[in-house]
Length: 185
Image 1: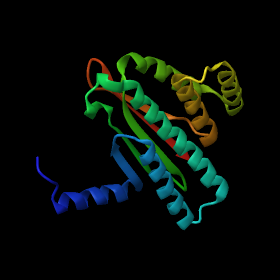
Image 2: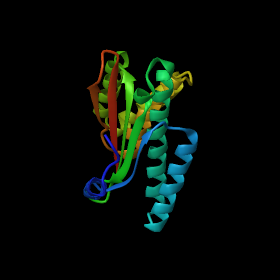
Image 3: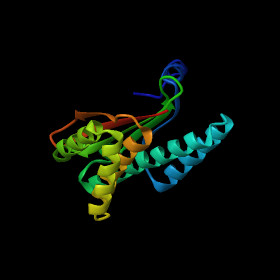
Image 4: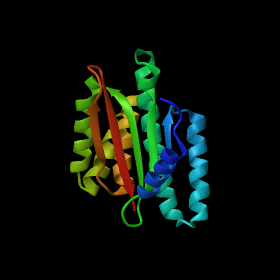
């Protein structure tokens, strides 16, 4: 398959406009990339004169989302081909005046049920119960990567005030593709 023609690039642009995508990326997530994304979004939000409190909430969740993906990629290490250690994320506008942050990355099938039940549990809690759960997890967590990722999910739900949307797509006997979407009003 060759390079995309101008028509299909225009089609992609049109689709991104339709889906209200501000920024999208596919590939290896590095600390340098994360720093660039934060800078790009800061310029964008300043240009749109976004309210400081909302901007702070957006950044907090963006950092959590992208750190989450970065940790997942780190946990796959050498056991997967490079293609299977790539990730994707998109930042866009959601319904109404909201922002949406969508991430996607490969995870091992053996971790799917744990992650799914963790997200389901987080989604089932009231804001007060979620706050309490966060405090309990914080007190009981050795600051390992896995513990940190769990806290990140709780924090995203707390800060956004929304349920976490997610899906798993099995791609092989060992890997699934995990996508997560967080809406910020």
